[in-house]
Amino acid sequence: MNTITKKKIRDKSLSVVNAAVDYNIPIRTVYNKLSANDINSRPGGKTILTKDEEELLVHTIILFQEWQCPVTPSIVIHLAKSYMMELGKAISPNSTLRDWFTGFMKRWSKQLKLGKTEKLEKNRSNACRKEVIDNWFQHLHEVLTKYNLFNRPEALWNVDEAGFTDDPGRRSVVIKRNTKHTTSSQSGTGKSHTTLLICTSASGKKLPPYIIFQGVQLWSTSIPKNGFPGTRYNCTKSGWVDEPVFFHWFVNQFIPNVSKVKRPIILFFDGHQTHISARIVKAAMENQIELECFPPHTTIILQPLDVVTLHKIKTAWRSLLVEHNIKTNSSSIDKQRFTLLISELWKNHLLKEHCSSGFSKAGIYPYEPQTVSKEKLLIPPTSTVMVLPVTDAQRTSSNDIIIDKPPRQRLHRSASCDQFSNTCE
Image (cartoon, rainbow, N blue to C red):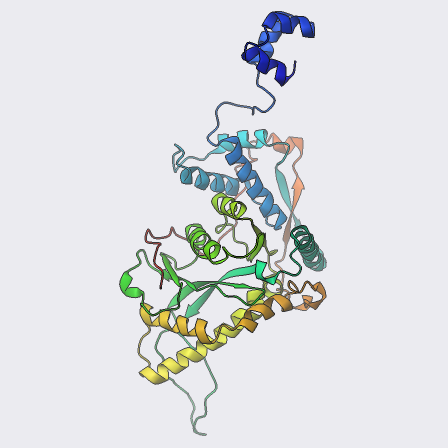
């Protein structure tokens, strides 16, 4: 008995008796089929997330795997919990969601499965590194072909976070012959660290800076009125980028600034699992933006900002600090002064050719993988992780979920402050 027949019976356009006669089955069987789950139903009771909401999570998980950064069950739970709380679902912040995860994997068993990691020896890891780069460029070729972006540099963007200190660093100076120790006054201790989100395109365009100060609240006194037009500000306890900050940048800075660019658009980034969430993936899909993450330990040769742009602006930044020390007798650099220096950096030193040349040297635009020097790869760790299928015996183990731990983070990233909307006109 098919779905159409069931619908006719429920609409009372077909009687149960006539359906039993048509299919030559007992009347009780007709009632059993009517009460059974239909084709599109999912196992278990009512779920926290709807089918469409869970489908977005599945899409996010598959994206991480395509980026060669597969997620553990605990990270899936973290992504789901953040998404549930964002949607206002009635869950406890302390909920482990282990039962939900078990049901989720059953509901999406045709798309997802558990895998175990296996370590590769260092020599095998080294042998695979060229293959990682080649596979990435093959994937990029497929994406560029799919969306016809080989000749659209304005649609290729790269974002990365970079830290700026108040220390210009050591530099060569001319001194007396008999001098043993050379000292120089400077405006800061070198301990001050401010993070910026920088975004450029293959056509040479640059987005206004997005400045993240360290702190729990952002004060209007920290924001000058004559900063770089379109600059936005935020703060976190650690001073680093976290998911709320990246989401705010993506929705309020990136999307509005590329509103006039023909879709689709590709945004390349250095993947960090604390930056990407289901709501970011959803916003990208709604705005026809393809998110592309570089493979681990390859950004030094694949990421345009790392290849050229950041080196150019960091060199210019140190020169600006030296100039500031000379002009002001090494007066301290507060948030306002820092922002004005960043404004000068963006106006006079972040040049169009610095933005576009990063994409060409990385082999992204024009698409030329052979231009990439694979000798510049970072030294890999002693072991590399690959994902293997889980056997039936392992799947029934009680430790399937508990043994998986999230990767160790370099820094503890805190929640972003409440005051988001601060734009320099």
